[in-house]
Image (cartoon, rainbow, N blue to C red; front, side):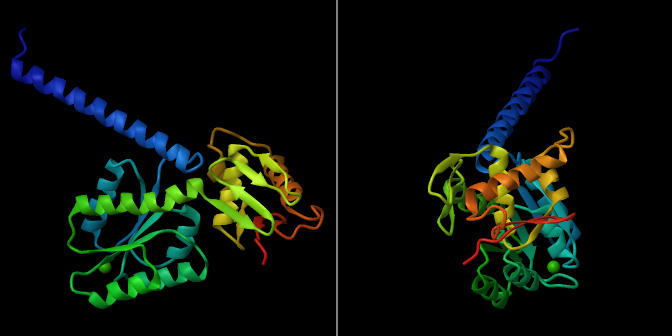
Length: 268
Ligand code: CA
C-alpha cells in the first residue's frame, strides 16, 4: 500500500516535534539539576480559586516541565507550602478563607522565603500596591497572556535560583558556598562536602529556626527506591557539628529534636 505523501510528511513532522520537545526537556532537567542540588524539576504551587484558570495554568506550566500542585483556598495554605516546599508560588489575591496578601504576610512572618507572583484582578490597583509594598516578586493582572505569565515565572525563578547556585551563606565565622560545595569551618579550614550533605544544609537553612522532620529530609534527599539507614542523617548532622560548632557535644547551631527531626539556628 502506498502512503499518501502528505500523511507521511505529517508523521515525520510529528516525530521531529516530539524529538525536539524531548531535547528541550532534557536540557531543562540538566540545568535544574545543577541549580537545584538534585531536585529534578522546579516546583510551582498555584493558589487560585477559579477552576478554569487554575486548570489552564497547571496544564501550561506542566507542559513547560514544571511540577505543579494546586490549592483552591487559603485554608491550610501555609502547612501545605511547608510540606510541598515549592520554588515559586502563583498566588491569587481574592481567595476564600485566607486572602493572598494574608498568606503572603504569614509566609514573611514565618521567614519562609519562596518567590511569589501575585495574580490580581484587573482594576485592583490597591491590591497591586499592597502586594508590592509587602515585597512580592512580581504581579500579573487578570486576564493575562499565558506566554507573558510563563516568561515571568521563568524570570522570577532565574532571579532566585541563579544567585542561590553561586551564593555564599555566612553564620558566625563559618561559610557555606553552594556553588563550589565547599564550607569554611569554625577552625578556618576549607572542607569539600558531598552533594547530599549540601542538600541537607540547604534544606535546614531554608527552614531557618524551624524543625525539619526526618520524613521530610528522607523524602527530599532520597528517592523512594533508596533506603538510607536511619543513622545516615545523624552522621550528616555529626559532621555539621564537627565543622561548624565550637563544641560539637553542646551544639548551638545544629539541633536534633528526638523523634521529630532537626533544626538549624544561625545565631546572632
Ligand atoms: Ca479569586
